[in-house]
Image 1 (cartoon, rainbow, N blue to C red):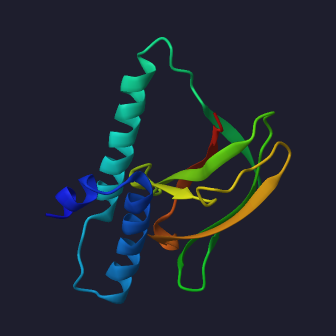
Image 2 (cartoon, one colour):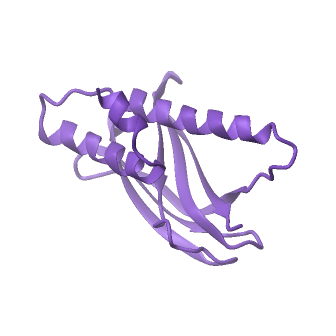
Image 3 (tube, rainbow, N blue to C red):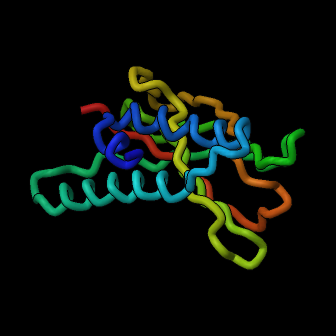
Length: 158
């Protein structure tokens, strides 16, 4: 039933819906849902759609990797992973839908979680050489963290 609900939502509604699930699992211990699988399937569905669209010769790629400055990955007061930083638009294009994608690994190299967070609102435009700050609290125990890979992306405005 939850998967049908997710499939009927728009892209932004899915992100909002999925971002509340980790909070519910903290506040209500009996609320057990595999958030990683839902987020991964959402990300995979999105990337599969992009791959299908990129097979057409007339479609241009409009995602731009951005620079993350002042990145810090620290333990929060609640012993969770907190990431902070500044995303700088180092391109010559106006960007929107700026997001951070992160992969977290344990000390043996096993993937703990793969997540995406929108940093800007849908209407926000990040101009060239401007930056936006972020502060994200991940629902991952800091004691489990061994390594991570964090990237920022934005989409050009057509």
